[in-house]
Length: 84
Image (cartoon, rainbow, N blue to C red):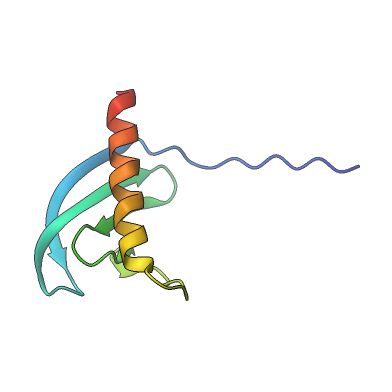
């Protein structure tokens, strides 16, 4: 039997920020977080697009993915702020 240990970076910084969204073409609110070794990631709370290192992350091929991304980002932000 082979054991596999998976370790992922825990976000050091999680904040609500207002940034320029490439998709919306204007400033929107983002949930942004910083992970050591990986850098900054964020989700636009208007369109649901995810960004990492100043580029779009791949979009899922699923219905209602934008709304799911927005809800997941809000939940992530609330959960992280509750633990602070």
